[in-house]
Structures are given as C-alpha cells and as structure tokens.
Amino acid sequence: MFNTIMLVFQVVFALLGLYQLFLTCFGWHRKKEDLSHPPQKTFALLVAAHNEEQVVGALIENLLKLKYPRELFDIFVICDNCTDRTVDIVNSYEGVYACVRNNKNQRGKGYAVEWMLKELWKMPKSYDGVAIFDADNLVATDFLQYMNNDLINGHQVIQGYLDTKNPNDSWISSANAINYWFCNRLWQLPRTNLGLANFLGGTGMCFDAKLLQEMGWGATSLVEDLEFTVRCIQRGIYPKFNFEAKVFDEKPITFQASARQRLRWMQGHFDVTRKYMLPLLWQGIKDRSMTKIDAALYVFNAYNYLAGFFIAAIIWGDVLLFGGNNVESVYNLLPFWLSVPYMAYVFIQIPLSMYMAKVPWKLYLRIPTFLLFTLSWWPITVHAFFTQNNKKWSHTQHTRVIRLEDVQSKQL
Image 1 (tube, rainbow, N blue to C red):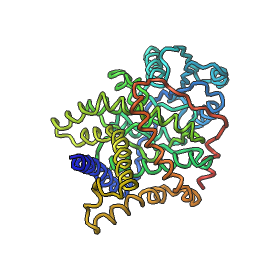
Image 2 (image 1 turned 180 degrees about the horizontal axis):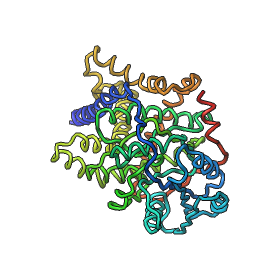
Image 3 (image 1 turned 135 degrees about the vertical axis):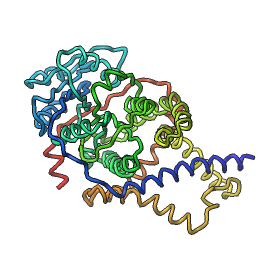
C-alpha cells in the first residue's frame, strides 16, 4: 500500500515537472520588444527603502539619468521605519521626495507600498503609471521607454527583466544570478510567448495607476509580489513580462543571508498557496482558462519543492538502508529512450539559459555550486512549511555601492 501511494505521488509531481519542462521549450525564441511610441505617459517612481543609506543614493542618481523626459516622472522614496541617514540622503537630491513612514507594528514592503499609494492618491498631481523599485536596485536607462510603450499598448501590469548587479561577489550571488537568467528565459518568456500570465518579481514592476486606485494594493504578505499577481489574474488582468526593460538587483553574498531571505520567501509562498491556489484553480476550470490553471500550478510550486524533498529522502533512504528493494522510483518505469533525453534536458537547461543570456564564460564554472545552492532549497522549504505562520519580515543588509556603469562594464 505504501509503495502504491508513493508511486501515485511521484507520478503526480513528475507530471507537474514535465509540464514546466514542456513550457521551457517556448523560451528558445525571443521577439524583440517594440518601442514605437514616443514618451507620453507620466510616472511615479516608488523606491522602497528601510535603512538603505549605503545604496539609495546610487539608485537615485541612476533614476535621474533615465532617458525619459524629466517632467514626465517623479521619484518618491518610501523611508520606511528608517533609523539611519536614508532620509537625509534622499533630501540632498533636488526634486526627489522623501516620504517618511513610521509604523513598528506593520513592517515590510507590502505595508510600505500600500501606505505610499494612499499618500500618492492624495497629491494634486496624478500619474498614468506607477513603477516600484527596491533601494538596492539599478535600472537600465531605457526602462521607462518600454513601460511607456507597454501602457500605451494596453498592458496594465508589467514586470521588467530582473538581473543581478553583483554576480561575481560570491558563489551565493552567482547562484542567484544563474537562477534569474534561467527564470527570465525559461519561465517568464515561455509564458509571454504562449499568451499566459507572467509573475511579478517584487521590483522592476510597473502598474497602470487607475488599476491600482480601483483595486488597491492589498498585498501585505511576505511575498507581496506573488500575492498581487494572483489578485490580478483572478480579475482577468494578466501581467506582462518585458524582456528588454532591465533592472539589476543586489543579491546576498553569504549563505546565511541568502537562507534567511529564501526562508521568508518560502514562508510567504506557502501562505499565498494556502489562500489562493485552490480558488484560482477552480476558477480556471470553471472559466476554461488555461492562464488561470497555469497560474494556480505556479502558485503550487512551494509544495513541489516540499514533495520533492520527501520523495527523494524516502527513495535514497531505501537505497542506502535496504538496497532500493522497497520503494519503486517512477523513473525506473520509463523506457530508456525516454528517460535519457528527459534527464539530459533537465540538466542542460541551466547552461542553455546562460548561453542565451550571453553571460561571461567564467560564470559557467559556477554551475556546480549552483546545483549545491539548488539542493539547499529543500531544507529551507521544509523549515518554511513548519513556520509558515511566521509573518516576521527580515531586512537584507547592503554594505557597498555599485553603480550602473560598473554593471554594464562587466557585461561587455
């Protein structure tokens, strides 16, 4: 009986994995984004900052150099519960607004964004679009040109291309960079090419201002980006991924900092899955909407990681302790001609996505440590599952300044 149950579980999660693997094939082709519309839309650029004195100045200087008419965008830095010099640094830049928020009971980016939007709607000036960044980001100078074009073309929620500004700092930051290149090319782009909904990544996001006013932010979980994505898809609003609009994010360089960040993500992911997955799946089935079904399966990914850990632990435990005689692996049931190409493509996805991202060849040497990084998701996911009711937000410390020129010079 146990073996039968295990086999059923393996088949279910193998099919989910096979579905995602099938989607990646539609990321091999990329159509260049259009830039046919001149600057028309006005933007409020919101920067979420909590004790970011080390990096916020570099981002502000970066945003002030965007290749977009200065009169068409304003910069608002949400100084959220700051106890350092963040406010003073923001105020030192002419025409940049420091919006100070102090609320010790509601901590986290979701609450900060919700508060800022309410303040924004009170202002006499109105905007066509709202773009959200983290204080440690750097933004490609043509970012608003692409957002302007997408808004004019009728898109209401847009996610830019998330890259990493410090891939060479450590094996942890390089692993995050590889993960971004993979997700951009083989998770996000396939959904764009198939007309499915894309998923917000927490920064480099742009929204139609009227949509935000109508539905409110309402996303205050530990993964506010995923929560808002689901709320949009439930309403029939499908976020769009713009491959050309690049934002560079600073990633942790130590395993401890990365594990803490990923634990927060997975705790939030389980929370969102519990609240939204089944209603979204049922809605997709009733509406016969593959977009909503796909989104529900994406939300379910936290449980894919969890199941993957337990299935692997049971199978390998059986192999090591009993010679593999008690638990059947679903992969043993596949014919050789199918299992070999399947496993080969599973492993080739990473170098393939790196090749298509045109990354420096030295970063290919980081693939073995990336695999170790990937395995570390398993214990983090298990811990997150049993602590998913923990809503404590954790802040990632930044200790040095990187400017857009530094990032671009290393890409040449």
